Length: 394
Ligand SMILES: [Zn+2]
Ligand SMILES: [Zn+2]
Image (cartoon, rainbow, N blue to C red; front, side, top):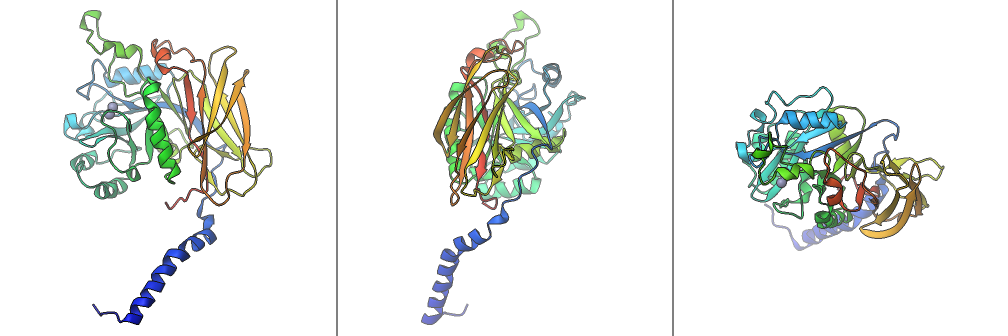
């Protein structure tokens, strides 16, 4: 390599400084790189559970795939991800969970997936088609960069599981598309998961928040066969919590795409109201963005609307808490037959911002899982954020 003279070094330094300090200005000129927001009308709401264990997980009991799928069909779900532990089968979920003749449904969209079970914690994989899970299992102890490269090659959606609990996701969040902010029916243990999510969002990472019951146990075949975990079935089962996606089609691809894009909210159970968050960015009185969407902030005021759809508690009064950039922005009461609230703010034209909501109130009954209501406490649902000025090339 040629040795640089003194003048050459200065030239290089100037070039480096220009690259450093010139870049933000260039990026601002270049800002229309945020793609247009997708249509609010082109889609269908679907509800499901994204974290479930069948008999193929050895820490599960009385929980065949047919039992889980049959229950979900009866209860009116639209999609499921049966995410068995992969370590119980040395990574070979393709010849266990997916090849089981019971892994089929005429009514439900069944995603391909598994719980990636590693020394550094757990993550769920979601995929619209079969993929080489064995290769992901085989490099579970590798450096994050190597795992990220494989994840991209496989074209899978990777999600951080129970990030603040036991076996928390101990990898870089740069590897994941979503984070399990609501694990199981016990809401109170999720506060730190939501804090981690807010930290990631504040740092510019557009990660979808999702739910997952992580249920492991079914009903014993007879009372004398009950084990120490059999009670779990009465409190934590399919849909506690329920994840809603606004999918462009009723297909595996539609569900995974909506999940990646963040058109997602979570309800404590499938009978609780679905939380929908919209924004009217151009001020024409019509909502033109929903949760998960990202747009330029114009510097003009934006009107937001929260709609609570469904729910079966008469005269319910819900408290809607708005979170802006990780901090509480306001609290609003929603009541009536079709509860909704609006609020207004002017997102910073020169910085990133996001708005999301949490909804507290009375739980709707979910008699198929009779002890769920009590453990969910007051938390009825939460939305993903509406984003402004998030860099899609981050
Ligand atoms: Zn786990
Ligand atoms: Zn699990």
